[in-house]
Image 1 (cartoon, rainbow, N blue to C red):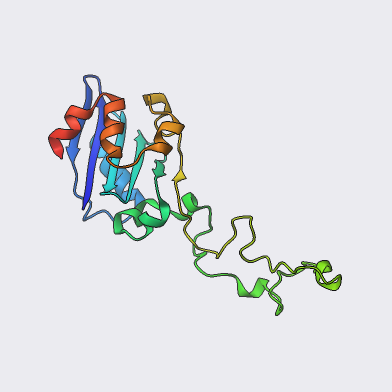
Image 2: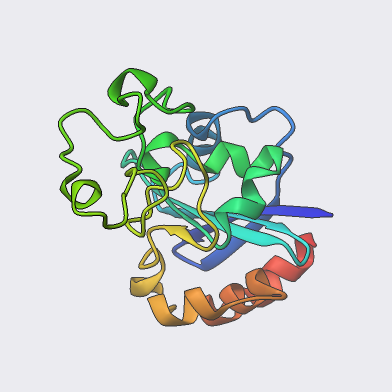
Length: 187
């Protein structure tokens, strides 16, 4: 079960609106939807939640690029809504980096130019694939949070608090913002 809402900050406080994401295909579409909710170019938060799975926050401040936080990228990657948020930039990869670059690997599995001195000494060999540096498979989506964990700092939700949220995270965020009543009206 998914829930998505827009929270727009106005002179009178936060205004919430339920939003349908069926026609949203890209992050750009989502940012445009958020901008429409605030004609004065105030802060708009897009809150998306899959029950007990993951949540995401997209912050749009006027014409600035959207800022994104996703609580569990691997879980979100299995969702059409999550795929909207998990841009190549957010995941730290170049567009189209879905497969490993096989041309950069020698037949022994090492990257071009990698000396394998340990192998000559009888030591362990490191293929450069799956090493502890987080390289894993190219194009893999990490488990855990990704994005700007300081997205709500100036609104009263610290990075530590955001990273520790689970369960009904959107309600907890709304409560910290002083917007819990308006969010509940659209649930």
